Length: 316
Image (cartoon, rainbow, N blue to C red):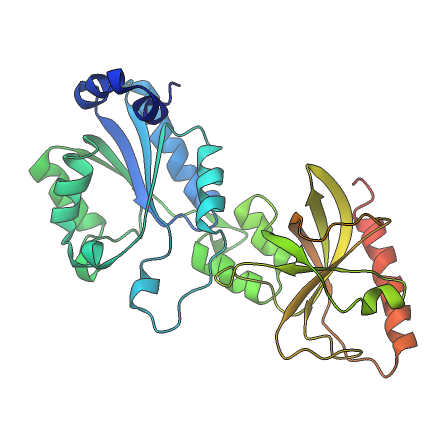
């Protein structure tokens, strides 16, 4: 499908087409993690847009709106650029990502629907999940949106929540699973491996001294990270993938850190990668972080961990 947003940005002659063109099918929300429930909504958006030759639009907030009000913001599954990339990969015509600020916080549901969605994006159809709420004080639930659809002449499609293995697929539930280290379950709800993007920074090189060199990762403060422990991961560096094991924690045996650290040992890999970007795709938790009595006990456990990862990720 033609990406009208790109055309609008690149060619001023398309402005007339954009302003007088067909209406749109739009969904809105935070879309943190872009999980199976989100995909079901996006599929409905695309189906209706294609059926009636309209634009498909996703209007997403960069951060959960609750973070604007909260004293302790929620850590996110996907950062803004990660979320944008995931949504665009779903072949949506227009992806709009806005920062939730005081302007949005003060808008009533009707003001937002009329002033932004209808006037600005010419909405013909709005698609939302059954638990979606918008507007000041979260007044715009599906019942109220249905009232607005009749008043302002747009169609409303409400998508039931997706349930997998007895768990409601939602960003909040996936965050809880990640925080508990239940990566396999979280991945099943995401339908892809939870990932962390970071930059390799110089560490204390203790891992190298015991035969397990590690890359220390610097990552965004607002990114959620799994519970402390050792994980089987797939590392992506320069479009190549490598089996690896990742330790998240405080290094209690050799060099205790007051700040949580993320270190990855890439199997059979000796390249110099300081200051390079790396993506870790989390596959499975191996064990909790343990304080060993001595260095040799730690080495023995790392050998066992490595064998486990080799067997688990044999295809990588």
